[in-house]
Amino acid sequence: MGDVELRIPPDVRYVGLARLVVMVAARQAGMVPDRVEDLKIAVSEATTNAVNAHRRADEQRPVVLSFGATAAGQFAVTIADAGPGFDPAPPEAHDRRDWSLENGLGVTLIRGLADDVEFRHHAGMVVHMRFAVDIDDRNAALDA
Image (cartoon, rainbow, N blue to C red; front, side, top):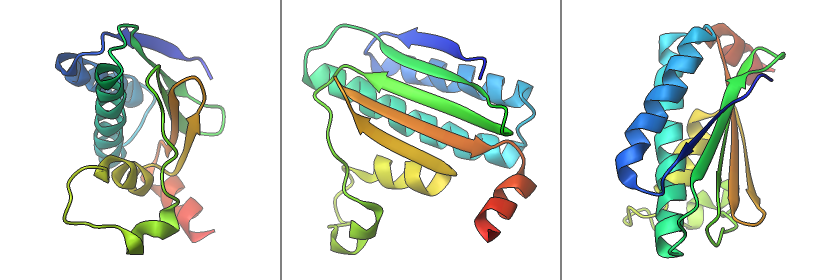
């Protein structure tokens, strides 16, 4: 994957910039508009979570996004922060959640929008998401 790397200050004012840069790269990689919309929301959620983690930890290092097309016909995005990290509840725990609370919906949204996602707690938090570039590719993956 020919990754592009973007480093943003841990400030919510830069979330929109990060989202825009990743969206443009995805469009250039041939991603169809509906998938770009999914990507936009997932990147916004993950980047906002990373910025908030830095703010809570009073961390001044940048949040790092790396992204690009893969040889497997996907578009991959990794967002890494230097915050305290967390271990998200497994997807099957959704029936035990208190959905009246707005906090914590980002992980659920990311899981629902990305074709594949990994959350790794390693010297901060790393979120690695993969999206099919084409709607037909995603539908084929879901049917398999």
